[in-house]
Structures are given as C-alpha cells and as structure tokens.
Length: 458
Ligand SMILES: [Zn+2]
Image 1 (cartoon, helix red, strand yellow):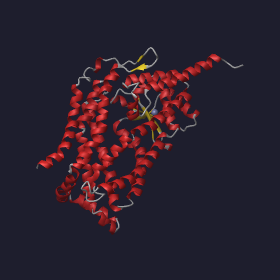
Image 2 (cartoon, helix red, strand yellow):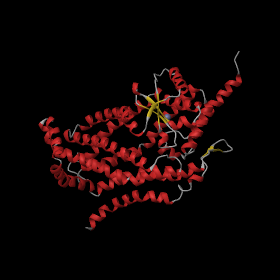
Image 3 (spheres, helix red, strand yellow):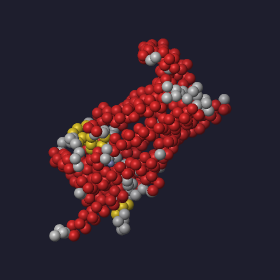
Image 4 (spheres, helix red, strand yellow):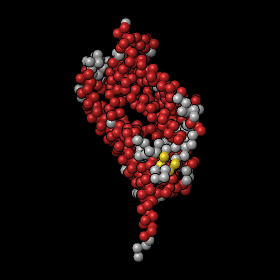
C-alpha cells in the first residue's frame, strides 16, 4: 500500500500546486490594489521609456503565472505517466467502461466495428473496433481531465486578474460560456486528431510518421482556413469594416504595394476585453485582416492606418503561410524523432508497445518540453517577422509620428512591459518590446526631418 502512495505523491503534489496557486496569487493582494495605480508610461531624462506602475504590478503576477504554466504542465504529464496512471486509465476504460458502453450504447460499438469493415482484413486485425473506441475514450477523458484541473487557474488568470486590472469586460456567465465552447472545440479537434494519430500508428507500425506528417500539415492548413469562418464567429460578431474613409485609406496602401486586399474585417472584441489588437490570418486568396473594434473606438485614423499597414506587412511577406510551412516541416521531422523515442522508451514506461494509447501523457510531455526549449528560436523568428512588418508599415504609411503615438497608446492600454529584461524577451516575447519599436520609428522620424532640412536639391 505504501509503495502505491509514494508513486502517486509527486502527482498529487503537482495537482495541489495547480489548484492552490491561483489562491496564492490572489492573496498577494497585488490585484486588489491595481485599480488605483497609474497606467501612463513616462519618459526618463535620457529618453528611454519607463513601465507604468500598473503594468509593473500586472507583470509581477503574470510572469510567475506564465512560468508556472510552462514548467508545471510537462511535470504534471510526466508524473501522471510515471505513476502508472496512464496504464491504469487505459485498463479501466478497457475492463470497466467499454463493456458498460457495449450494453448501454450498442450502436456506438457497432459503429466503430462497422468503420473497420472498409479496412483490408490485415488492418482490421491490427486495430479492432474495441481498441479504436478505447483510444478515443482515453484521449477524451484525459483531455477533459486537464481542462477541469486547469479551470480554477484559467478562471483566475482570464477573469479575476483581468477584471482587477480593468482589462476585461466579460461577465461570469460570458466567461464560462466561452470556456465551455473552447473545451468542446478542443475535445472535438484533439479527440479526432489524436485518435487518428494512434490509429495510424497501429495500422502502420513502422511507416506511420510518413503519412501522419502529411496529414498533420494538411490538417493545419485546413484549420487555418476554417478558423475565421467556423470558429471565430462562435466567439465574436465578425463584420466588414464600415468606415468608408478608413477603408479607402487601407485599400490605397494595399494597392500601392500591389496587394489584392478587398475587405477588412472587424470583431466585437469590446464585448470581452478593453485590450486592442489586430491580426492577419489565412493565406493565398483566403488571407484576411481582422481588427478589434476597441482599436476603431479609441484610436486616431492615422494610428489605425499604421496598424493596418503593419498587418499588410504580414500579408505582403506571407507570414501566415511561411509559419505554417515551417511548423509543418518541423512537425513532420518531429514525428520521426518521436517514433525513435517511443521505440526506446515504451518498455521502460510499462506500455504494451510503442503505439499504446496509455503513453499519450508521455507524448504530450515530450511535445511540451520540446516546444518550451525551442521557444527562444520560435520567438526570434516571430520577432523577425514583426520587425519586417514594422518596417513595411513605416515605409508605406510614412507616418513615424503616428507610429510612436500608436505604440505608446497600445502599451498603456494593454498594460504591456515596454522594457523587459533580455531573458524574458528571449523566452516570452513574440513581438519586439515597445521601446525597440518606438526607437525604430524615432530613427525614421529623424531621417525625415534631416531630409526636409536639406530642402529641394536644385
Ligand atoms: Zn504583427
């Protein structure tokens, strides 16, 4: 009895940390004092920007929250696997849940059996309908468990903290409705992707990375194309930009850059947040620019134009497509590495074979650790792309003063840290810090002034 307890001790410890940590963050009292703090960014005598006290306070909570999420999550998955819970869950589903399902929902069992009929007989033997059902049940149960375990943590981070700092406009039911939608969408997507993944591993025990890699790339392309059409409207009202003046400005810039932009979209982000943002999604003819309505409400037409010019930069350089291709290529190679790893670890983990679904937590932990370690590289590429888009924005808009005003305004409204320490920028920053972006615009402004001073040549 004692050995079982010891095996589970670490797992319980991590579960307790995840459940208790929001309370600890809450009882620091930092969030409660936030509403009295000024959010203005000041300029130090040397010209460098200083973070607002409110942004500093938010950062003193969001940094540990971010670190906790990044470090504790892979530990949770590993502890779950190493304590034997993965195998226990698979056994429970096989011996308890599957027979009960066969009695109560015979159509479900028949359906998985019937799906197998299309497969050649040799494949049917490798993946009987019962196993397919257990795989799907394992993935759904495990993922649902993670969502529920992280519910208090995410409620604190996404609702309590955001309200304390005046960044959220959501009601409690509104937040929970979004959470529920996210869980459902996540379960459908993760459920089908991982079930397909384990099914492929069973059907092609040696060559699965070849086909799985192809399907991974194809699925991410389809998801990027379908998200703005099917998923964004579940959370926001999406409308074409109505402001005729702004539309004309942006279509002019696009035309000057030779880009086929026909429409700009606006989402009603103000129903959930006071934060401001914009993004480009899709690729090819399905590329689209999306603006938060909070941007249109509080910013000057020149500032909005700079934002749009920046987004056009992402469009012009095809960042979404390039990102997809890069991630697809890395993911494809990663699958071969995963096969190598599973072939060497399955026995040590007590799995039946490398394709055992009970090894899912270990696979997820591996992915989490690899993506954590590669964050500095991923972020460096992302910041490179953002710099390209900023240069594009400054060149096509020719409005460096509006650019400086915009990024000061954005940092104040979103409570961002303008001057992060180097290591934090390396690990967490997908965008250059505001100070760097503003400095670039100041150089452009300086160059413009110098140019004007020279006057006409002749
Ligand atoms: Zn950008």
